[in-house]
Length: 470
Image 1 (tube, rainbow, N blue to C red):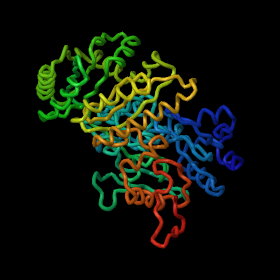
Image 2: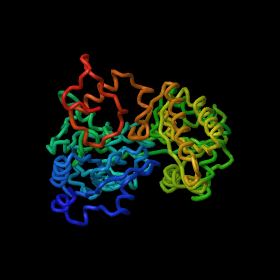
Image 3: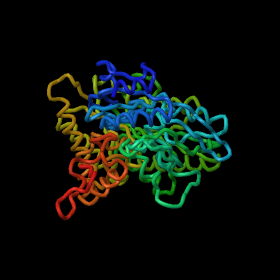
Image 4: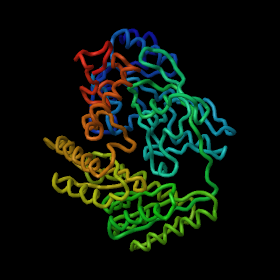
């Protein structure tokens, strides 16, 4: 198989050394896999050829972008080919009239917004890793970001996909029409984590840059006061572009690094942003300040200009890097709870950290209840990984019991695969497994992800149908 891959690609784009396999055997999370070979295509035709070669040798294929994922979605579980799309990084076309762009899966998220800026447009999904993560990875995981509260996650910004299916055929799913007739296969493909097909081009929507913007920083003496402010703002009929919360520990870590003047004495800070016409943003900013004061805000400030606003967002989006001061490793989780259950859930998050003797830091998308607890640890300590994963599973269970969801934007991957029964019954899992079976009857695309073993039910005779994926 490797000889055939070398014949299909330049030799430097087929990797099999121990170091290369080690590097491509993991993402930004804590799980690790062992690929047999790494292949780096540059064109759709090369992706098709790689998939066909792997199929002839009955080898799994795992699509991988920049490796910034955190749920082990691109970590190979059964060896095989890791197909890296980062060189498919062309912005093929920007149409400022239709407000769309055809892009390769390897285009970096932030680069797309920079390319669209001269037309007064940008790509709205903005994960914290947007300076490194790729559009293909965003599509695979239906990624969100701080500004998905008002704009929606990636699925709301994808119109069509060119996809290589597991048998090597090429299909275009979706269309330029925002609401095409028929089954929404585009919606099925977005968020499927490379288990159904490999995206080779995407038609994405671009959003007009708002004429005005206000960014507020509010500090509080308790998490509960900040959370009540979040609920209060939305109850007043305002859905800001972003509502982000950071607890004291993570504020201290960020301030130690950036020296941005953050209020480290506060138990929590809330970063709120509103966009639109000047009169509207001024009114909405005043309303947010009013609600914050009613919930005993210690300080309320508004960014004086673009430089100050950019610094505040740098603080928020650099939080995960800043925590390196606290420990050599961290486990960043991703779960969701209703906004009304934020306070009680956060109390349980800290309690889980205390019980497992783990330093817990929190930064999250408070507006949509998307929590991102960070558990700090030293992976070199025996048994530590197991302790962290036990605490992580407990966190997910707490959130689901509160009426939440397994994931807000990171995906299920390997990380939450075995927790799927917390949300889905046997019939639900079987329905999802049937979709997988329809696209990939031999289970070769990203096996061992999303669905736990046994998700595909037996028929009434007890026999498995031909090609069943188990």
